[in-house]
Amino acid sequence: MIFFDIDGTLIDHATASAAASLALYDHFLGAIPFDRREFPETWEDIMDRHFERFCRGEISVWEQRRSRIRDAFRDPKLTDAECDSRYRVFIQHYESQTQAFDDVVPCLERLAGNRLGIISNGIRAQQIGKLQRAGILQYFAVTIFSEDVGLGKPDPKIFAEACRLAGQNPRECIHVGDDVKADIGGGLAAGLKPVWLDRNGLRADGITVPRIPSLHDLTTVLKDYLPREEAVECRIYPDGTEECTEWPARS
Image (tube, rainbow, N blue to C red; front, side, top):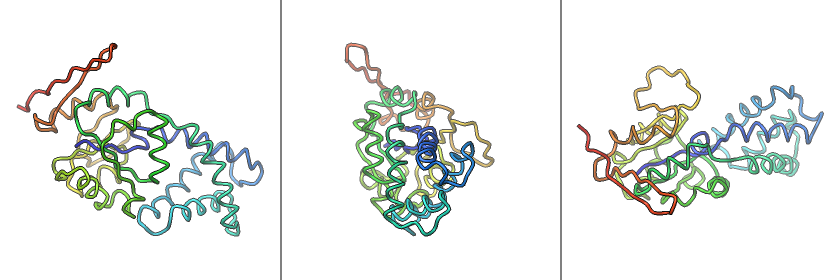
């Protein structure tokens, strides 16, 4: 089973979030006490801080959203209703901006014949919506989200539940993701075989798992990671016909 993370791996979260944060800023012009040029980064820092609390099971999804808004507006007295209304401005713009990276569909098509799944920190409806809008939901047989188990990556429980749903031992599963802590550290701790998708060329000492700059490079790594009977690469021709072949056995 080959599992994928969503944000930063399949879906370009950063670009959509930056654009939506500026739309939020402009919608409430003068009410957000940060420099506009720096606000996308500020918003992302605020989001990460409270989203990690949600993934640890400390607060609910709406509590972390309200905390983001109160911090962004520097107004702890905002009511829940006011926070929810302002958050909806952000999320409407965000959802209209999310799209898959260019290397995603070609990668998933090459992996046709292999069982694929999703392990994602996030809200099921929102994350499923991203996959649907990108036209890639149909590629995945198993989907698990932090909302489903009450804990997110890097907690091993979400990986274990994904493998249980897939009916496979974690040692037989691969997880592809971009976050060193959540995807790589979490995957290793849970017994999976992680592949680090490093789209930004980050420096990270001590990372020993396979590292790729693009999903175009994934099949090369998987040839050494999957048993022969599980390793299948497919080619889809313009007329819709499909040809699948097993990858060579490891030497």
